[in-house]
Image (tube, rainbow, N blue to C red; front, side, top):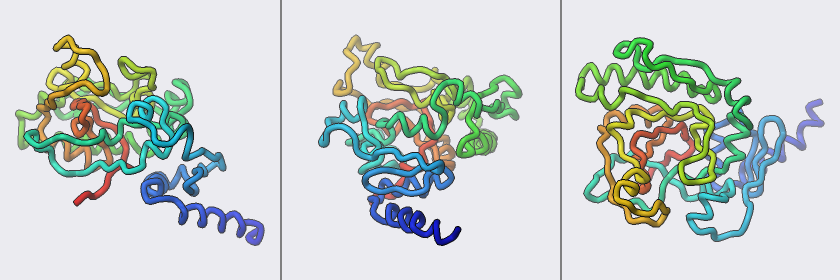
Length: 266
């Protein structure tokens, strides 16, 4: 039996060693889901192959958003822990906004029903809100456990900074099978691995363009806005959640479990 498995093991090892570093972060982050990765495809734990490259090369940013390949989701994408300086913030990309939908469908569920089967309900910051906010969250990748730890750490933070509590009130968006506003792209909220904190104290690029009466397009001129304290963001990042406030197309209420995108940039 072992002799029969040796060729497969050699193949898997060879694939992993030939993949670029950005792709390898997928395997390192999701070892229970992904067996091996090459520059041509990834092999999931059930043996399914998923292509890395699809469509034409040298896509525009809009094309990467609307019709990405898996490589577009991770290649040269770097989400850093560095705090935002609003006076100098002008990112050249939106780390995490390009999403290859088949990847998330394979991992979290291919339909609303499949995703729902993996959801549990947790209560958000119960020391402060009791059972006011029951949130549906996926158990895949232990996202539910991580959000419970975030909830606990935020309770400790609010004990020191009570003025932060309003930002964490009225959360939502942990699970909602839908498309992103003004697009045909399935929202990451469809997979139960996100959370939106208080939208009344948050800023979103589409809302601001609407207020200005401007067209909602990717190349619209934006003025970055944010009111969320950095200490809140740091707690989410500690557990592998990226923040929409580090996007040029800012969405400061939004946190999304994407630990594969974290990197160190000098």
